[in-house]
Image (cartoon, rainbow, N blue to C red; front, top):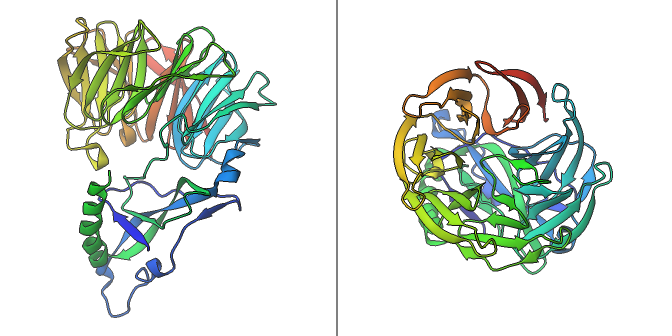
Length: 431
């Protein structure tokens, strides 16, 4: 039976180029109402973002990691910097590899196909990547001859993310024994408004009923993977998944730690992990690194929530609207001088903030379609604007010691630090 989920939000359409071994489930009957009836007024129709599942056989999935020449990016994901290289996730598809030995002239050199991938982390030339519920380990010591050295099966919760920011999700049942859902094809389609609205109520109800160390690289604030010492922490919506990586090629799957609900990001400072969730910020002590323990939490309204920490303050961006909740978007600065009792210090309004980063007294905020904003945070009670790069879509930043890396909508930007902020050093299109 064909199922439809209708949601209230939209994103830009993305088209996924698939190999023959991957198929998109599609019902011809479901498209019957797309065609316009000549007897109906054009105003009865509207354009909707429609997502359909991409299915791969389990046999192909188990052998799906492959290094190929540079590919056009489909949807910019998270960014990671290691040595002279930048790795950019292509949501649910894999990782783009960029030689950044000369930041003024970055060169795209390869694409690592990893179906279902969202996050990576690197230590001493070993790259760890999620592939749905599997953890893949790659040896990148020879960047021109990347090799898979391990694949740990079913050590992470099912990693595929439903595209809740589209208008319509269409899917069919598939062979769970022999097939796996690895991603989504998203297209813009014209639909009869009345039929969409009628179905939306039914399916919204149905949806509600189904519920930096030596040798490591640097991820952005939206990361779900974090290496601290000899441990890899990978958060999912409820847990901290802990792996011992003293033997880099052969991680040890340790006990998971229940961490709350709607966990989205992870940040480390010293012996503490800071987890950003849609409900608040959770602080965990990792003095015993194999067993993180809850220290405290800071609650806020429901919103998408990355966090970075500097000194006595945690900087949290909350993005409301869409599937992120009704909380007003903004920057929340939280006093953590007493780590057991974090308190809100001050808030600043933002439009649609995503990732953020800090270098010395400069605060960088990716405010979505409102661009990249740079502030002097010397006085948290009166942030001083330094730069505002408008007319670009921004997603996440990594403030390296030498320069700033920022990934936007299919573009990698790099900025050099100057006395009064930053200045564009280079940009490279990823498509």
